[in-house]
Image 1 (spheres, rainbow, N blue to C red):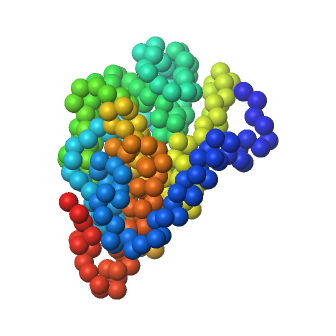
Image 2 (cartoon, rainbow, N blue to C red):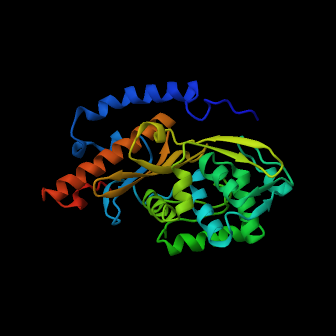
Length: 297
């Protein structure tokens, strides 16, 4: 693939148009005090914002067990790094290459590094990359899912169950908004995961010379300057999902949104949650009320 000198500097037209539309729609968020925002203002099935100490600042059905979609790839990445060297070369199996996935596709017998596969899985949600990581770490995806569930328990995500490495609908698989925020908090403690989640664009060059240009599926990396990073997800059952880490004066805030009906609602919900979290921190600092009063269950 031939790269133009400007491709890594500017947004594609479609993304630029989406961001302009989103920015315009967010003007209304400043119309009223965030502490008074009702549950219905978060257009999703479940949502939560949590501070770096684990205190919940706002929640909407935080313990509802819902389909996680590709947000499971955060745990896939952690388990892969626990067992594999990022520089290690992985040969893509026919099984992994045939998994239903989005572009860019990986090819059978193609060789890629663990780091390459992590970029594909976390930046673009390439399902075949997640399966390739699972096979490299555990031999097969079923055994890898056992390792993922063990990892979830270790980090305190005890209302979560995984069936595969990709998040595709399969068997019994669920998480909660509360658990998802904890999962991201654990994930960004891995320097490589934090680095990848914070990238807008990345270029992969495979051993065979193929070039894959990646643009993060996280639109808020272009819109929110305090964004540390996040992971998107979507299936027909799960709808739109997103978990994010956003810097505040008091440290990172972790937001999780499950079951939004559109990407625009996903981004709006995330930014509103972050604003609510920051407002709660400020009011708690002034002693106006304890943080727990922001929680709506």
